[in-house]
Amino acid sequence: MPDRLSRRELIALSGAAAIAATSSTRAQGAADRGFPQGFLWGNATSAYQIEGAWQEDGKGESIWDRFAHTPGRIERNETGDVAVDHYHRFKDDIRLMKALGAKAYRFSIAWPRVFPQGAGSANPKGLDFYQRLTDELLANGIEPFATLYHWDLPQALQDKGGWESRDTAKAFADYAGHVGAKLSDRIRNFITINEFTTFVELGYKTGLFAPGLKLPPARVNQVRHHALLGHGLAVQAMRAQAKPGTRIGPAENAAAAVPIVETPEHVAAAERAMRELNAGVLTAILEGRYTEAFLASAGRDAPEFTGDDLKTIASPLDFVGVNVYMPVYVRAADAPAGYEVVPTAKSHPHMASSWQAFGPEALYWAPRHLQKIWNVRDIYITENGCGAADEPAADGVVYDTDRIMFLRSYLAMLQRATAEGVPVRGYFHWSLLDNFEWASGYSTRFGLVHVDYTTQKRTPNLSAAYYSDVIKRNGV
Ligand code: FCB
Figure (cartoon, protein in one colour):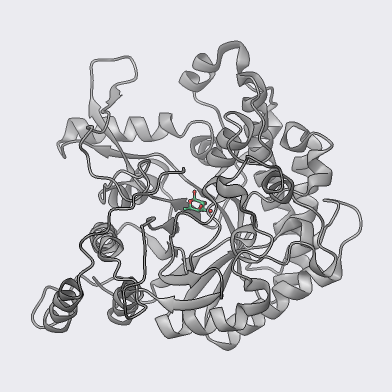
């Protein structure tokens, strides 16, 4: 959300030098802190946030094009028309990944590039781009993970009701099947939908994101249900049309329930909280039902659904992806739910955006809950990272000590999870490059690599050196 902290007094080169000294000495004798062999380290991005080329090669209009072009929706009325011009600079960007030592890359496919009208006839030039991108990744030894929906719905479908209509779920499955048929020769891993909760809540309830609607609760619940249905139908379409061995799963920003104290009763409370706080999406996908508490609290606003819908929604997955940015602290309580959310203290530290409380334990508990509660056997952290008030110092480099602190702390907690046998297979840092951060426009920077938006010049931040070292050692 729009919230830029401009405080940046402590960059001091001396601080950077101290970090460099620590990193050169700490390898000796330290406990291993390694990750499993073959752990996939990567970065994540999404089409609208980086590609630009919004009207090129036959692409149709998306709801984000329409939204960003509507005055007053985005900070300073910025748009993704050009973004970081990745559409034309993807080879340079892959070189940056290669320099980091990245093993994998999660990007998204823009639905309106492939089907400009959302359905009907495909635009072959749309998929050509993703073929070129993927071939370049593979030539550099980087494993592609393609997200099918990172919020850029074709505007033509929004004009017919968007996710309020069941037909959108079906159109999504058709698009997914088409992509699977054409690209599964070179892409082995697909992600259906990115962050159901975010685009449903912000797009259809608060109106802060595209398409900017403020619907009443029953209609919001129906939108969410249709997104779940779209996910399930897309999984099935992929199974039917992609090469055998193609793997598919969702990427949800699950509420990460963290026990306030690690005692058995608080841990049990956090497990209960994990199911209920995620009842609208993850629990529905992993259990094939809406929990009683979810339906009771929705009351007459509960979504309309059939038993078949739930079966589709729970179609077997190859992995579960979670985007983890912050914790939800929970404690045991004498309440009917058996848990209580503990509000974060007023002085609780947060990253540059005030919504992002600093809570590294989230990266331990989120995957651990997936394993413990739902027996998930393949987990990816599909996003994790932080915004920072990055400004280049005199030498042109951003000394983002805060991002390094964030990464070191969160990754140590992820290492704890893998060391305890939680089956996390990979981690995608958000993001490779600074980019268009939705309603905040370009004001919030999440990149390991700084982008000068006037020249498109890319310069790795100090945090890129940190992440690269993690990848090289496969450890923290
Ligand atoms: C996530 C989104 C991603 C990016 C990061 C900062 O919610 O999936 O596109 O905006 O937050």
